Amino acid sequence: MSWVWIGIAVAACFCLKLVGLLVPERALSHPVIDRVAQAVPVALLGALIAIETFTVHHRIVVDARAIALAVAGVALWRRAPFLVVVVLAAATAAVLRWSGLAG
Amino acid sequence: MVERRMPGSGRERAAVLRNAVGIGVAVGTYGLSYGAMAVSAGLSAWQTQALSLLMYGGSSQLALVGVLASGGTGAAAAATACLLGIRNLFYGVSLAKLLRPRGAGVLPTAHLISDESTAMAIGGASPASARFAYWSTGTVVFLCWNLATFAGAMAGSLLTDPKSLGFDAASSAAFLALVAPRLRERGNQLVFLLSCVVAVGASTVTGSGLPVVLAAPAALMVLLIPAERSPRPDAKARVSGESSDGRKVNS
Image (cartoon, rainbow over all chains, first blue to last red; front, side, top):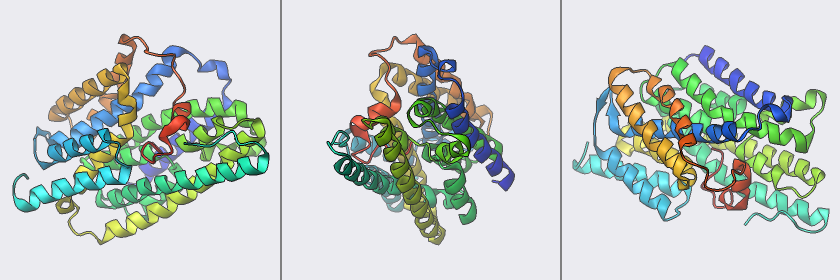
């Protein structure tokens, strides 16, 4: 990633924070805006999870990553701490690949 | 449990500082993961650290790295990071009332906006304690995030084959941990499933991280499901319990 794009992203993210502090409160307080704004991260994170787990170079692939994600899901359901969830998922994928059970 | 209504300003401040350090440690575990994933996705250690210092937004940074790791362009990564930063716009609106920043003070106030600092400020019993909670939490979390990023980037640089250690799977697990608390709401469940389908479908035809951006309008589907409870600000939900278990932090 080039420094130019990093600079643009940094500037844009800072502007979002700054504008929030500066705009009049009424400009953004509407229940519809509020709900959509809260759902945007859900959509983006869902998309990232799906792409990182089920695709390889424009192809749909189910492999060790899907099993690792399932393990992470169970760990989260059992209210495991963040680091435990991440390490469990990585270890699952690593073991499956190392043992040759899944790619 | 986050203590926030201790009588007496000395005890209240001590409680706020204790919470801030606890949150900082939890954020550190995110920072470690971010640092290690960023260098294995191809960012240099300098770029990894610069993002933590200057962008300073956990989920924006992790998403940027995620797009790069899946072969996306810098433009797609930057766009995704900005979309995840939209949340901070709304935090700013809530914080402006509480903190009333003046003059140039608005710049550092803006920079330290995060899920954690907002949650702690909203939890403050009075304007003075809100300000103290905001600045102490903001500073501690900023330091922890950056120190952990550095440690993670150094550790990540030593790895020769991140995939053999399951790093690609760790990244999805991190995103799932970020989104999990929001999936209790039915509207969000619908958005989540639809965005997964749209992104995977789009990735078979277009590349370069674009599918993630294309999935963003799926958020509009939340409007099809009536709100279950009166919508409450994200940050307040977090104060009531999710920031203290170290799981739902710095998203």
